[in-house]
Image (cartoon, rainbow, N blue to C red):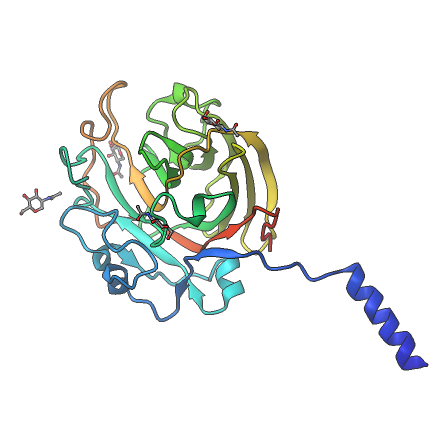
Length: 298
Ligand SMILES: *[C@@H]1O[C@H](CO)[C@@H](O)[C@H](O)[C@H]1NC(C)=O
Ligand SMILES: *[C@@H]1O[C@H](CO)[C@@H](O)[C@H](O)[C@H]1NC(C)=O
Ligand SMILES: *[C@@H]1O[C@H](CO)[C@@H](O)[C@H](O)[C@H]1NC(C)=O
Ligand SMILES: *[C@@H]1O[C@H](CO)[C@@H](O)[C@H](O)[C@H]1NC(C)=O
């Protein structure tokens, strides 16, 4: 009788608080504890082993494993660790045709299976990433940086950008940026202004966790954010955004030059000599299927 009553109680507790169902993971970019920088140059890498880095660079030279606590979703996987992406004076990309992109400094990780038309850009998907500064390899916040974005398959714009630093063109932003050391999510990059839908201070020694749910057919985007080990909370959207044409996710960063308005930023402008390297630490990168509304929050 007692057994029956307690199992009844248990059953009602279980039904009252169902365990959240795990969402279907389309790309798991969480880096195994055993990974080395040189692994990112191999064809077995989780990420594209050829793009994006300086013309004469290898990933072995630009990938670091700093000693920081794992991010929220690295911990959830248990055997995953954060990864640092760095740039230096040699981080000048040659796009294969046309001139070197000497205006930019850039190093980025692109998910291996993400060829522009794969399952990560079909239906509705949620991209997860955590980001942290490296006080030993600081950015120069006089410049504009893009630490994460999703570029259209035809390269004519980004569906969203995570931005930090001083905007190269302040009028491109829908809000005035008073503090350059902020993380800002902007929607589709082609309109002027682009819509700054979320802004938060880019505090050091803090994991900044993001998730963006992108409806590739519905043109709706939702942004989630939290710090350290707090569950994600919705901070923007769903807002209307041009999400057409598929494309690729970039984790790692692009540093714009400084210089007069109107220059060709990919090829002109000023880049100060970088002493050593500048770096940003990434963790918990994965992409899940949210076509049925599933979004992992904690
Ligand atoms: C890469 O090396 C080649 C050959 O030395 C050189 O011509 C080119 O300018 C270098 N590229 C960069 C971005 O430094
Ligand atoms: C991209 O990946 C998808 C899924 O694996 C595949 O069906 C498609 O053929 C690939 N496209 C190209 C251009 O490689
Ligand atoms: C999404 O936006 C693109 C670009 O404006 C448009 O071509 C497409 O028809 C839109 N899709 C929907 C479902 O509104
Ligand atoms: C930061 O960048 C600006 C603009 O390029 C430059 O004038 C300044 O010297 C740089 N600061 C450092 C510490 O490199």
